[in-house]
Image 1 (cartoon, rainbow, N blue to C red):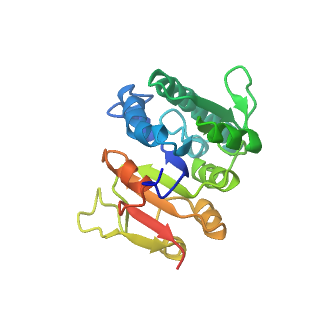
Image 2 (tube, rainbow, N blue to C red):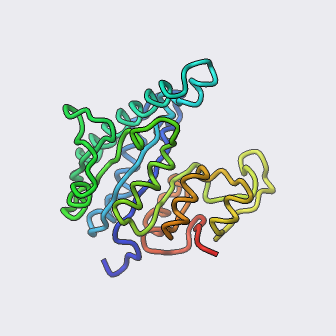
Image 3 (cartoon, rainbow, N blue to C red):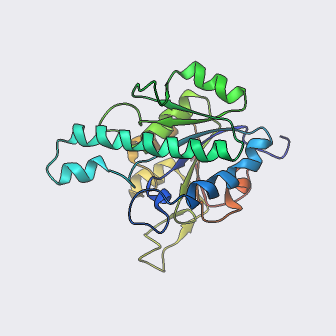
Length: 239
């Protein structure tokens, strides 16, 4: 463990990332790649919690835009995260990684109910914990759920895996001149309206002095470097 700066982390994954090259659902190769990426740190004793979105299956905001009641749409989105969480758990376990899914919405046949002290105990016993169903409440994103759970379990860092290699001042996909930040403050993220995480999640991390590291999961070495505290992606810190 001496090589690792962070001993307890929360990894936020987007649901869209699980699609891979598909237009919908889960590409089995993606959870497998995620498992292989995080396994070395897990084997070395790093305590890993995960929050995954549900956008590959359903997004409550999109449903609301199409005329659906927002609360109902968000409830459907939270259930989508449970599907993704179970898929990740299955893949992790097939790779020999002990794992538990804890859901903010009770469904005891498929997941444990979320209880903070039990989650911490699982982590202490070397189990990966996947937090499903967001916060259990509509109108809150999985980014906010990730920030909330990270604070609750006393994680030392919130790591957000994205499709790009950090935080930019513009969308690097559409703007080749976009500038990447190696380090940026919470206040700058909020004042510039940078869309790395929603404002509620960023503010929650700021209030609890929780650093955020944003990197690309496509870069195979990035996760290991980030856990060791090496310069990778973008780090969001206090000013």
